[in-house]
Amino acid sequence: MKKRLRVLPSFKAPRLRLFLRGLLVLLVCLGIWFDYSLWRVTGAAYTYRLPERPADVILVLGCGPREVGVPSNCQKARVSAAVEVWQAGYASAIILSGGQTGKGVEAEYMAKLAVEQGIPPEKLILEERATSTVENLRYSQALMRERGWHRVILVSDPYHLYRARRQAADQKIEVAGWWPALRYNPDWYDFRKRSFNLARDSLSLMLYEGFGWLLYR
Image (cartoon, rainbow, N blue to C red; front, side, top):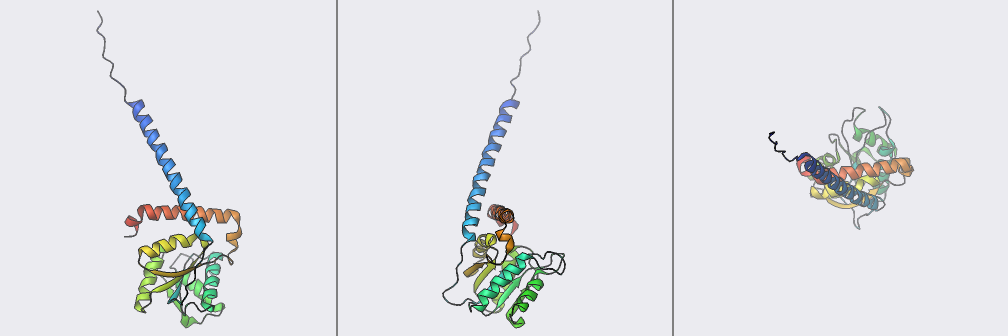
């Protein structure tokens, strides 16, 4: 008489189903988080605020050149926007923040553009170490403290300003106003490039909110 073997229950299928359900829930949550981030970034892109009284300084957040010796549309747009705010009398000085990119120092490119547009060199302060928005703010804040400055007007591309303001608040920088470079960058009026930049900065915002405490401590 043959002895029946006891069949052990298989846990592979239930575990796989549980894993797939968990993965699906995670993807749905990430999708909702991305949509929320995109909504915030896009909604803020068309806003601006200038202070009722002058700020201490205008801070231009850097971006890379197109190629060696050739400034990018991004740099041209941000500098032109900052010049407009400076000429309107909202601050007496401009900090240009941006470090080495392999194609040159961002702040130096922007300083050349600012001088070409009529800003006296003595009104420009170059911050030449930053390689990220957090560093733009951190190193510029150190320059501000040396001069006893507190109130700043942020200037950057429209898709970037929401995250920059959030990071400035986390570093206890008083943002008196902000001015988006809307009218000066042809990339903003290109649907594909605008969509890409909005999505990219939404992901950057998610990364900062999710892991900023670890990456930027």
